[in-house]
Length: 136
Length: 136
DNA sequence: ATTAAGCTCATACTAAAGTACCGAAATGAC
DNA sequence: GTCATTTCGGTACTTTAGTATGAGCTTAAT
Image (tube, rainbow over all chains, first blue to last red):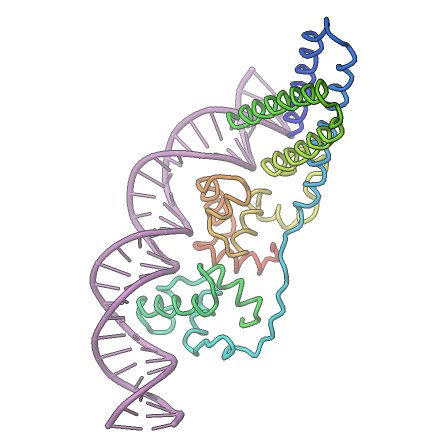
């Protein structure tokens, strides 16, 4: 990106030179205004990059402290919690089914119900929410 | 790189328009030079942020020091770690792509490479292993 | 200059995951 | 007995996820 910034600055300077050349016959007082504007633009361009770099290293995540009266608060059944633990362990639906001696279809049903109760769209999101709520 | 060229072209055109605007205001009213300069500053400030997000901290003089030890142990690149964090946040590949300004294809590539390095077969398993190894 | 590694993106495919809707049996509660 | 809930399982379908492969490009090292 260093090169990108440099090239862009060079382009802007080149544009400024063209302006100067074209406006040579006219009032020469305007050129200084353009120069100032260009410098300001570049400076703020760099400031934007600098500030953004510092803010990008942090991940924006708000810790939600919802009281955990445990499973029943979210209406999770015993089976659903078992499936949830399977998900968090990195198992596939099929593997969870084998572990619990259930069919994959049943696991899918449980997983779908789980997502509704946890307000999740993906199993990774369910893991995230379950950990936030200290269910697992 | 086509994208970069396009962005440059757009930037130059934008600057040109701003110059013309400044001249117009200067010729007619002249009272709004400060306003125009402010607008230019803000615009380029935002452009700086946007461009930097596109390439993140490629121009950082300090090569990743934070978690480098553990990251290097598993050979995870910076991008892969970012993708890994996206996965752990419960995002889909598409959402990770939007967050990092990358295509879904690229995310898939990163994810696949990630799985090889973490010895995982699913993203949930990758989350599990990454937490065990304290990568995230 | 050549190599190596990393990043990006694409296509084409297979495999899971997830949704929607359904039926049926077991368990308690009223 | 009736009702509600949970559990279990199915079919059919759409959507993501994941794999394999190839390519172009950038940057750093040799």
